[in-house]
Length: 218
Image (cartoon, rainbow, N blue to C red):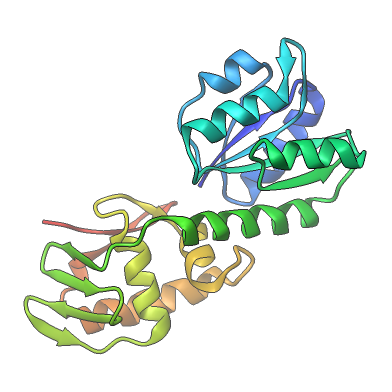
């Protein structure tokens, strides 16, 4: 998962980026309004509202205009009620006042990402190579043959199928399936092993070393 960190204080940005990277996120830092608005697409924005070349609320407004599904958390020293209300009205999903703990920030990131995932338009049928998933009925077939999966196995397969051919990080799978990135990663490996066996072709779910897993579409 990719986070855009918009923060003009270099020391604060370095500390936050380091902590987020250790938790498995890919972090891009932007120190100005201009850099924030020209940054590459991401999953979530941590946005300081006080920036040297403008107001972070304008960044929030513009990013929300571009995407209704982007997660935005205002991270700022502005703790007054009117500032929090303004930030939320402009499109922020949450508001964290400095100073804060990484435990709190992690929980808020996970909550916002979960809401964004649930808000994304769902497809009823997903086909990736020989794999056919009926999302509403929660059924799976491979080459036309039904496959019985547990709830967790189905959710893992669905997480991979929503991004076919793309390496999906383990933390993304943990968040999609278990609702947190703090779960034991060995749990993912065990369930993926069982999923591979049931799909009948271990090559369908490919391990991407150091990242996660990929559902092959060939």
